[in-house]
Image 1: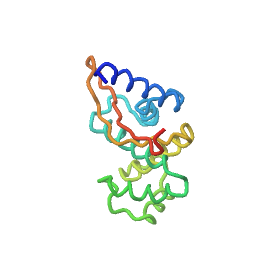
Image 2 (image 1 turned 90 degrees about the vertical axis):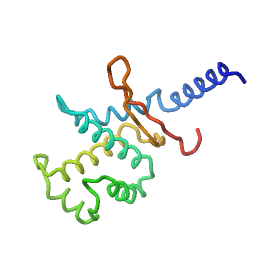
Image 3 (image 1 turned 60 degrees about the vertical axis):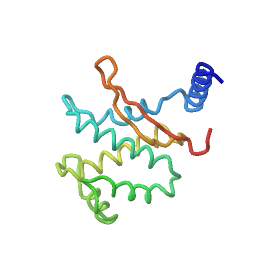
Length: 154
């Protein structure tokens, strides 16, 4: 099979996969999760944190509901600002916080939980898993690129 034939086959496979997911690209879905948390003039580092939280919440939402709490705890421990928090501490922080709380840990937890809720609301049957993501500059604009897998191989 020549290079052109392989590219054509890959393009058809991507189109078929997208069709299965209502033509929603995973990069678009992640950006939709980020939208409520963007602020004007957000610096690149904060923008990347928001993207990271959207990828984490996406992957947690890909698990069956009975595994999400366990996966949430596993994921929280990889976020430097949240590392070391125990389940009871997280519950206490979330119960005793309000939307005006300026504590960075509370803000990150609120964003993570908010994104997870939005993800399960908008994309309840989407089982794609984010493997990697990056911003790629195209025509002077950063474009989100996402590499994903489909657990059941659809």
